[in-house]
Amino acid sequence: MWYNHKFFKYCTGILLILLIVFMFGKIEYFLRPFKILVASIFTPILISGFCYYLLRPLIRLLERIRVRKSIAIVLSFIIVGFLIALLGTYTGTIVVGQFNALVKEIPNFELFTLDTNNFIDSKWLEFIPIDTLEQKAIELADSVTKNFTKYFFGLISTVSNISTIALMIPFILFYFLKDDTVFAEGILSRLPRKYFNWASKIMKDVDTVLSSYIVGQMLVALSIGVMMFIGYRIIGIKYALILSIFAVVTTFIPFFGPFIGVVPAFLVSLTIDPLMTLKVLLVMLIVQQIDNNFISPQIMGQRLHVHPVTVILLLLIGVSLYGFVGLLLVIPLYAALKVTVKNIYEIYKHEKSHKHASKKQEA
Image (tube, rainbow, N blue to C red; front, side, top):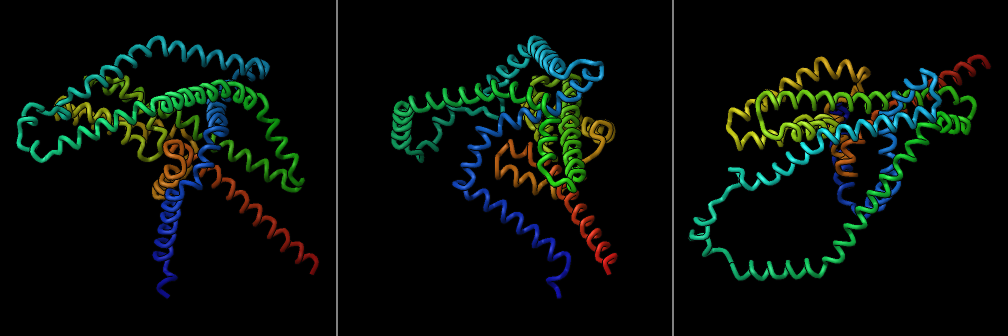
């Protein structure tokens, strides 16, 4: 029958996935407790897990030269802290200066300019309800005044939550790095003996996928940032450092990240001349070609082998569930889940074949 055709099945599956994503985005009351739980508990754990994979190669390197694990962890913290302080000392002032200059210059961009005198004298004002606008402005000012205390204490609460999370992360990260094998052994010890080897393999495969993705993405992002900065300096665009830092951050967004990262540079170039816009696009194309053909294949090693359509659907699910954080987490989580399901399916096939062989022997 026509409904058994592969095309119909694929279309039905895609429509069902999109419907599920849409419904998840609509039931805010269902997702709100989950978001609060993630923000309060899992946020420091997720950040610590991300830092764990970044610091683990350094700690293993120190262990190879016969440094005790606890001392290696402390040394890695000191090294990273020193590098951050050094980088902040030499580039922090430049970044802040460029950011402030960019913010101050935005109202002066030609794209945003408006001849206010001609606008005031124009006949369009006859159609604007000035009295209504004044009344709305008074109501807005009154509302802000009344709610100032609530907004102020809300701001203090947000800052205190961020400070608490920032203080928790080093302690959680220390125990992640120190007791990572203890955690794994504790989980394996609670499983049936016959599944010990399979569970160990699943954990190693998931660990390999997450490690290669996180460390690889960080190195690729830094490489792209350096190349974008050099390219921006060559073409002479303003705010090269802050624009390249933005490109580094957006690189972590799969598929769309490189295109989002060049948007601020593209907008700045529009305020200069069309030739500068072409130069920015040329820099992006050259950097992407170098990354796709040389850097990513060498750094990433084992790719996740995720189809572009799957990536787009995963990004829709991630942004519907948890916004920008969902964009960053959905691909590595999908890769870990994919590896887990693949291994469980292999266990199922092995058990099935073993039972079949046993029945043959009994017969």
